[in-house]
Length: 131
Image 1: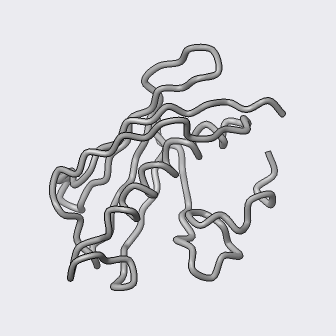
Image 2 (image 1 turned 90 degrees about the vertical axis):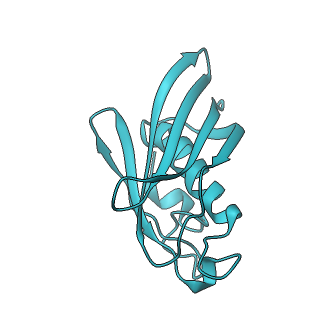
């Protein structure tokens, strides 16, 4: 799929002036991105807003399937906040496929601090759409 199709995506679009502008890479069986939240991404002082945390998990899972050439959307997302995610530290966001049934992909993802501490985990069901 053309990368030019979704340039206004909040998470990865290059044209969105308030977007996160995430970049991705495939590493073994995982899809990975990094992100450093600024003060504009916080909820409570020094803590990344839960909606941004959820967005990171959503994007890494659905975008992985999209990157494989499918038109895909999130059908379900479950987020477990393990501890506050701090502003100002580089976060590693990683997702992987853990199962598939027809047009549904079961995904897992997490957000880690530079020391490897997991701050949030996600489980997603990503659905392939008909083109």
